[in-house]
Length: 474
Image (cartoon, rainbow, N blue to C red; front, side, top):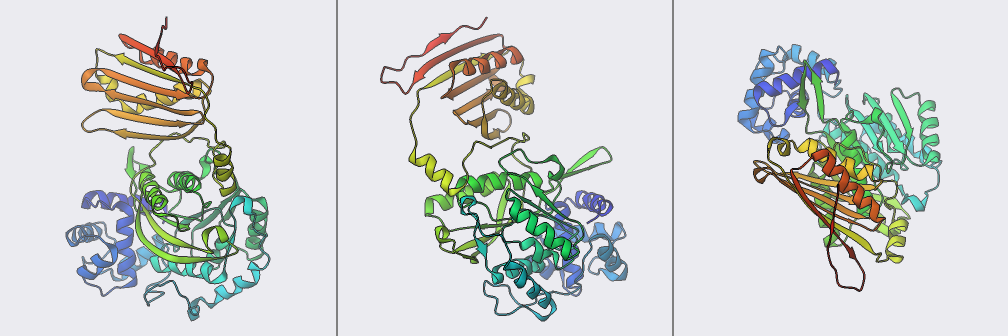
C-alpha cells in the first residue's frame, strides 16, 4: 500500500469510526476485490467486522470516490484497489479450506517447486542458535497460507531470522512490495543474498543483526507482516515478540496528526510446551500487543529438531496496540537460546543483594499525572547508575496512577505513583554495588524534587536478621 492510499484510508477509518482502522478497511476492499458478489453478511463473516460498521465504511468509501456503490466495488473501485493496494488476485487464489496437509501444490503456484533445489544448499543448522531446517512442504505451506490471507500482495514483509530461507520462496511470488531478512547468522544471510541476486529479486534486503541488541531504527514502525521462528525458549520468544512489536507499523503521521494502526500480522512458529509454559507463551503474546487470530497445530515440520519433537505450531497474530515500552532497550546479556538458558539454570547462585525502599511526597498533582515523564525519569535513573535493563513492564491506571517494573540484569526496580495523594514509592533490589542503588535514589530525588522524602536500605541474602537502615541524602 502506498503512502497516499494509507492516508486516505486512515481518514476514511476515522470518519466511519472503525475500530479496526486502516487494516480493517484494507480487509474490506480485499474481500470486495476477490469476491465482488458477496453481500454484507458474508463480507462481515470474512473480515470479522460487524455489519453496521461495515455499512458505515462502505458509505465513507463511496464519499471518498473509491467505490461506486455501498455494495459494489465497480470498475473505478477495482482500478483504485489494484493500483493503490497492489492486489494481484481478483479471485480466491486458494478456494479450498486451508489445512495442515498439502498433498500437492496448486497448478498456479507450481513455480514454487523450483525452491526444492535451493534448499539442498542451505547452510547446515547451527544448533547453538536453535536452528533446524523446515522441510520443503512446510515452507510452501507458509507461503500459500499468507497468500490465502492476502498478506503478501502489496505488503512490506520482514523475517526475524530465516535459516529456513522461506523469504526466498515468498520472493518467487513477486507479489510483495518489499522483503527484508534480519538474522544473526552471516552464513544464512550470504546464502539468501546470493540466491536473491541470482533470482533477480527486487526490493529484497538482508540485515546482519543480533536481535538482543537495540533494534535498528531503519526497520522500526515500517512493516505490515512479520514472519518469525524464534529460539525454543520462552525468553527467546519474548525477545522476538518485543522486536516484532517494534518493527511492525503501529502509526502514521500526516497533517500534524498521528493515526494509530492496528491489525498488522505476525506469523509465529513455536514448539509445544508443558501447560504452564504454554500459558506464559500466550501471556507474552498478549503483553506485547498481539492477539491470536488462529492457531494451526503441528503445522511446521523440521529435520532433526529433537528438542521440539520435530514439529511446531503456527500462530497467526494480529497487532492491537503500540509497543508497551518506547525505550529501544539492549538485551545483549540476556540468555535466549536453549543451551544458554540451561547453562544459566545449571550454574544458578544466590548472591547477596541490597534492597532500597523509599517514598516521596509532593504538593502539586499535575506532574504526577504525566506518566510518560515519570517513566523516562525512572528508566534514566537506572541507566545513569549503569544498571542493565533487561525488560520493562508498565501500567497506566484509570483514572490516574502509574506503575513500572524494570527487570535488571541484577534483579529489579519498581516505581508507583498515587497522584491523588501526591505520593510516589520506589522499590529497588540489586545484586550489584551498593553505590548504584544510591545513584538511582539521588537521581530520582534531584529530578522529581519532592517536598519530603525518606529512603532506607537493607542487606539481603545474608544469614543475619534483615534490618532496614535510613539513607540520608543531602
